Structure formats: C-alpha cells, structure tokens
Length: 396
Ligand code: HEM
Image 1 (cartoon, rainbow, N blue to C red):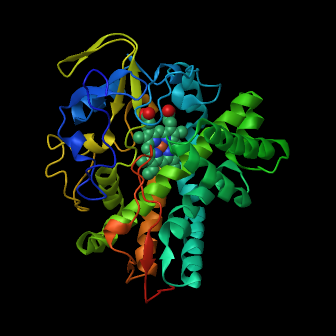
Image 2: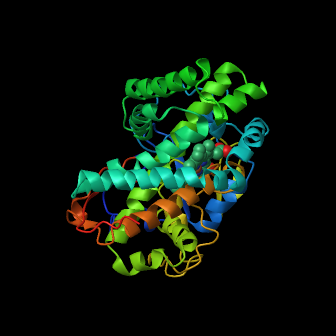
C-alpha cells in the first residue's frame, strides 16, 4: 500500500475463472493505484476513459517512463530505454517507422496466404492429440503449438526451435520471474533469432525479407525478431486455451461457435480480454481526463478486461453471448499501438477453435472447473493446464 491506496487485486476474488477480479470491478472508471515500487499511479477500468487514453499522444509507452503494477519491488532498478527494434516501447515518430515496415507482413492479404499453414498446424495438433489418447492437456497439445508454429513459419524460424521459444516467452510473461531468469529467457530468444539470421535458414520468412531490405541494423533486426516471437504466440495460445475452457463449461455457447465463428471470436476476445494489466501508459504532461488530473510522470494501467465489461458500452457485459456484436471491444488495444497481429490472431482462433470441437464432438473437462490452474499474476491471463477427455474422434 502507498498513501493508503490499494494495489492491484489479482488472485483474490474472481467470481469465475473468466471474470476480472471483483476488487477492480468496484472501482471508479479512473482511480488511484499503488505500484510495488512505491509509485502512486492510476488504473483505468471504464471503457471511455481507457479508449481516450490509448488514443492520446500525451501518453507514452516508453519503457523508461513506465512503472510496473505487479511483481517484486524494483525501485532500485534503473529504468532503461528500450533498445532499437523494441517498438512496442517507442512512441511516434520512431514507432511509426517500424509499423510501416511491418504492416504488410500482418495485413489481411498475408493472413489469407497463411490460412493453409494455420489449417495444417491445427490438423496436425488435433491428430497428435487424438493419437496420444484421452485424457490430455489442451494447453500443451493444442493451445501452445498452433500459434507458436504459425509465428515461427511467418518469421522463418525452424519448427524445432519452438519449444525453447515457448518456454522462454512464458518466463518473460511472468512478472514474478527473477530478473536473471527473465534475462536468460530474452537471451534464448535473441540467440534463436541471431542463428536464423546468421545461417540464412530463413528463406522467404519475414526476418530474411527485413534483412534483405537493408533498412534495419543487425541489433535492431534481432530485437524485432524477439518482439515478434514473444508477442506472436503467447496471447493467442492463452486465448485458445481460455476460449476452449469457457466453451467447455457452456454448452449453449459452444453450439453457437460454428454458426458464425467470426462473430463468436470477437465476443470471446471481449469477454476474456486476456491482456490484464500489461497495457500501460505514462503521462508526458498533466492531462485532465475523466474528471481527474493525471500528472506528468504518472503511469496508468489500462485494465482491458474491465473496459470490455463496462455496462455503459456493452449491455449485460458479464454474459458471454456469441451471437452479440462485440464491435468496438478493446481486447487488441486501440490507437497507434493497437495489436499488429490482430488479423492473424483472429484467423488462428476461428480455425483452431472450430476445428477442435468438430474433431472432438464430445470433448469435456477431465477435472472440475475450479481445479483448472489459472495464471492470475501473469501479464497475459490464462490457464497453465486444461485437462480434457473424449470418447469420439471425427476424422473428416
Ligand atoms: C500489441 C493483444 C496476438 C503482436 C497488442 C496490444 C494488445 C494486444 C492489447 C496493445 C498493447 C498496448 O497498447 O500497449 C493481443 C491479443 C492477441 C494478440 C489479445 C491474441 C488473441 C498477437 C499476435 C501477434 C501480436 C498473433 C503477432 C506478432 C503484437 C505486437 C504489438 C501488439 C507486435 C505491439 C504493437 C505496437 O506497439 O505497435 N496486442 N495480441 N499480437 N501485439 Fe498483440
């Protein structure tokens, strides 16, 4: 606690594994938050204020300005600026240059080209699961491999490297990881990207093309590869696992998935909003917003799970309804940093979730829902394991 202000409530009081903590729900749309390093900042939980902050150039994502809302007390650490290529932590105009370079690699046309690869990796994962027999863990056998293999293919990284990358990004996502562990994880991913660039294995992949363009230096390119590998699979994997989990507990919604998978996926994104507290901004100047003044240097956590459950924007927001329009949800953020991989993520979720329930028509949880371990303290919320069982496999 700092100045009597509450800290971020995490594991304490979720009514269901799919709901944000009640402690946040009870807060005003923009309220004070105590950070572990002693900083007194803010948390935004209202839809309008969250969207306004994300669109406002007076707020920065520069790493050296951001305070961390979860984790060890790191007040003694010297905050350092992001290295070249770590563009999520840069502001325009530096940030704009990277988005311009990368846009077409993640646009709808490129994603359409990747559809056969998404289907191939999905079918393979489902076949392997079936071959391994019931029961099985859907996180290890379905949610993790599909997006990891797709992003490796897009970047030109060999499939054999995906296990190491999966493990390293999980460590990076855990804000309680020891700084040395986190540094090791970054080192693992960086080494993989360097190897890809050095031995020319990446023919046709994004990294090879970016290298050939000559627009980026070596260090920049390596860091860029690291960012894309790290951001490119864990959030999608978490959405796949949590999405499967919620549908396994709700047969009515599950039956609706195949009716309009595009619409269904948007509602799952809104309802589950897995980026729980890592979307942050620091005010560059004093900003009056939502009836409050955020002073220069103060950090705001944009609590997307709460913004996407704001009853002022989404009627009956705590009800999962795959037939509703969730248009305007903030699960991919908003403004200049809005998710680069959103078209890819949507395609993966549509293909993989529908195929899962087609392939295993009587799929069910193998443990009571309360025994599924959730990742409450992770920047990307999700489940560690999802034990499932089945009796029937449909192969066509
Ligand atoms: C940014 C969510 C999948 C790459 C973001 C942001 C959100 C988000 C909320 C905004 C962060 C901010 O404003 O600070 C998600 C979710 C996903 C997903 C929910 C899956 C369901 C992906 C995929 C990629 C990706 C597949 C592929 C590489 C990125 C990158 C950024 C980003 C590079 C930083 C963009 C920037 O700063 O300009 N994502 N993401 N994401 N996402 Fe995703």
